[in-house]
Length: 452
Image 1 (spheres, rainbow, N blue to C red):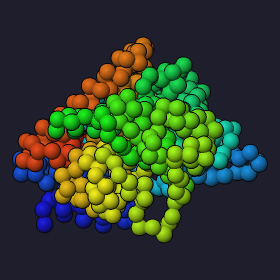
Image 2 (image 1 turned 120 degrees about the horizontal axis):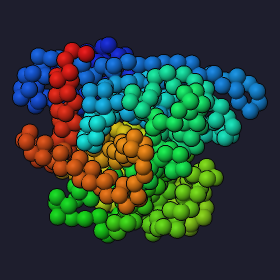
Image 3 (image 1 turned 90 degrees about the vertical axis):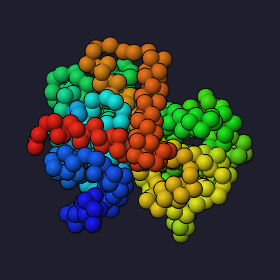
Image 4 (image 1 turned 90 degrees about the horizontal axis):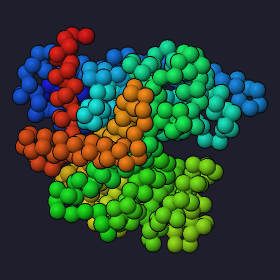
């Protein structure tokens, strides 16, 4: 058995009941097999085994009081995975599905994603099984304050800088940051995704969605094409999906779908700027359900989730491009085959690991331009890194400056992934190129720092 395959088996054995983490490690290690022979120094320093183990995993209790005066208890997590190239950096996720395996998978992905951005950021991830859906602002505030009462001991602007993720938007970041300031008596850039009035960066809410579209545009550009006139399927309806739609419209494409946990809408006429503004108000202000879109716009059809199906019907429509922006493993093998048979030729992942291993194989076998999440959705953490820089410098860059820097970073990520895939003998294999390019930088830093 090869070194990387043997390591995957060890990870499964040592980390039972963590399927998402196993999946993430297997996907990366499969790509890294060609580096074993070229870099004997990595084998000697046991980098491959070291890089799959987090520096530390912090688990804690989060007691809080709901609006009825009842004491509730949630689980809190922060996994600090690797700080070889900079402070730990990665989001917080508040969702009932959160467990240690989910957080480890996200933190592991973050190692390579952050490395690809060209910015000096290590990798971490955290969160809780708290569900902000249906909670009042007061309940969310009390929970965030209780969460920060433990988290503050483990984070700092030069140690670990969390951000938002699923269930953690501007409201939650504000409550978390406000309580950190109270506890520490200092105003530092310990969190990113902050509001513009208290240290946030322009373009940060838009960054992940914009970046995914920029990456898709780069993949098409290499092949002499553009997004102009192309139809795009988009899943999700949060920040990432919303701003994916916005940038698609900017570049002349037509987004036709959005979704949430209850179902999805398909609008053959296209989601134009007026309709997108409705979605932003629906999701960001009124916190409603996506089915209300179909109630307002007769051109749209709403399809509720059917747990009995072995595929997601959202991915079974004619289109040229697809942007999965919801959650992990939302595209399985059957979904991937439906996408290919419906004419989709470019996939750019706005979510983390939204495609199963079997789905990825379908894309690669059919020569689909496949931008995996750790490359395609790195725009969010890239602008988080730019927010850290602005906080350290005590200044604020303009919207145009930040967008220009984001675009440049996404171009650099695409170039690194593409050129590395060429260097390792498989041009256009973005998973191979992105994984190896991200790994090499971290591995070299780990070797240079010795056994720590």
